[in-house]
Length: 67
Image (cartoon, rainbow, N blue to C red):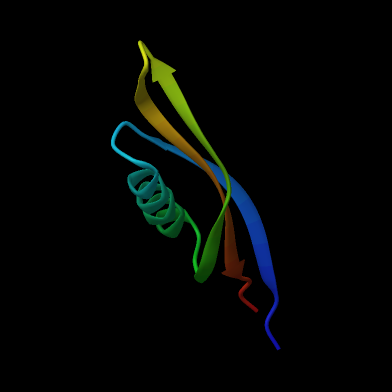
């Protein structure tokens, strides 16, 4: 039997939502062991002068707890 925990993190990028997701997962894996999944809870884009300037995602990251 395994027990998992879910933690919520936010990540931003000036490039794209995909880049924000990749950066968030990469960073989470540096701190958390046993990361198994992540899903995007929210997305937000900041706009200046009619153009997107940054992309933000809120991720729910699932990791398995160790014995």
